[in-house]
Image (cartoon, rainbow over the protein chains, first blue to last red):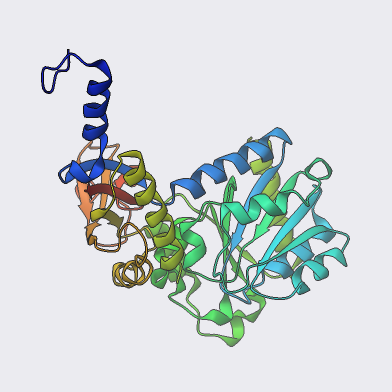
Length: 242
Length: 113
């Protein structure tokens, strides 16, 4: 029997059911969802990480302002690192960074984001189709030069390195806390320029440790091979810990 | 200005939930934005107003709840809200703390019709 009107026509009940499902007859309803807004990106990032894991590759997301020395760091590592690495490059325009790395015999793929200010997990996933992960131990993602937006997007990396160069001036860490909070390693770059700038290195390091008490910090200049070697050693150490 | 791409993800989620609930309109969207999530609430509001046109959220009220950093200290086991970007326990000064909230952005609630 129909529970709505008491009639005994079975087909009729289906009609009632249909009426109940009709959204135009329903009142407003409130639903609790509690989902991360970047849920889909995070899911894709997890997928990328599994892909890296399956190939035994450690992925490092390199982030900084434009011109802090991300590409120069990678060029320098090519000369002294005792691990193989490839690079996914993100820039708004041009293939210049990837070309610089290929000139050093590093496997590199350029993503041109157009006007997008950051790389997301979907862009990195696409780029992975162009990378031979079996030929590398470490895959760097050189993010778009920007101290704001890339901090909100997990690209599937295992570690984040954030660079800040001496000529950018003091207070960058205090001014861009979300970015530096994401760092596993902060690199102060172009330290050979310290004599020419007012730069209180200890105050900057203290600020970094207020923001992230356990963060690792290294000072580096591409002209000082020993400082570059320390970066390579840090990465090697992290590889062995995985 | 990644607020625009964040709003795009948000609108996609809203539409999926609305369709799954057989709704025809979303009348209210409530989000929680952590102060350390990297999102500027004013820009998010502007982006939402710009991109909601011709979506199910066109008429929706947009409510942004700001979430400060909430930590739990592993030494004294007290929970605290941080007023500065200094990740330590304001009670015992310990730095071994778990972040409970304030670094993420969530879609919390939808009102559908």
